[in-house]
Image 1 (tube, rainbow, N blue to C red):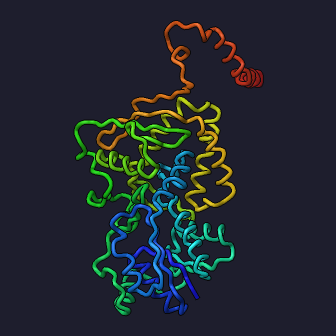
Image 2: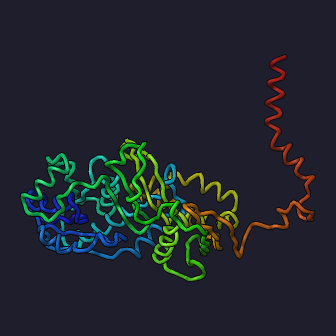
Image 3: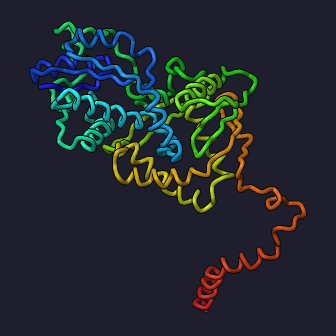
Length: 399
């Protein structure tokens, strides 16, 4: 039997690798997707082989992640609940897709992951796997093994000589990629407790950010960012550049309590510096390029789209249908936004577009010849007709 394991090299997946090999007498193929974890990938292949993997795939998927996952989601304006820009959610379908492809390439019967039975990631991984390979076998060890805690995993690791840290557990868990870093669990489970400042990796504390603001211009074509400060860049390079710029000014921190798909509430602290700039800059260009009714209709559907991404329905027909509609809406979004970065804030201070729908000749409070203000009276009376009739009826009923 062959099993492809989504492997990170941490305690959980290191133990899972050995446990799968022993429990199923299987050949384990370890797969790690490089989607921007940086130094976390160092020494991963050697560690996986020492733990028992017969093959190890460590693949650089950063360009695909940016171009085919993050940017389409940004074109849709997706935000989940109170400000989560879906950094972890959007990474899972890409990881699961490549895991299924590796399973096909190697004739593996099953795929496995280290997501717990309480979280969203188990759903995201498995929905993607089933959507792409409907008869694949999925093994989720946290739902079937007898281990109950980190202490149990450390004991198992010691028993089998698995090379994992055995020091005290970090007081929170962290997940990093090109779009963001998420922090949850441990000390963050108390929603009243402020996150420790030394936790953050991508952003400086706003109060320690530079005392002078910095301006950045982001250019868009058909809803996609294509240039920063006049320099054309690939989607991945745009994100990397903006992560650095925003991070230096403490932009992109969010602390929310969100509703997981499985039903519980969970506190998440996120750093999304570049993504925050992209979201706000795109909105600014949309304001002058997107038709009002298209914008309003799109915005009414954004919560549903964001929910699909959060829940794991990236490879579902309803998400693909909405993506087509949102991409059409974004086809007019070509222009440039200017943002002012200062001590944790990113303020839109300018926007321009070659085909702007904003016309100062019409919008002006000064004299002009396009808009006859007398017409507004009839416009208002027509919209007030039902309200006036309602009032008349109520008055008549009172006698």
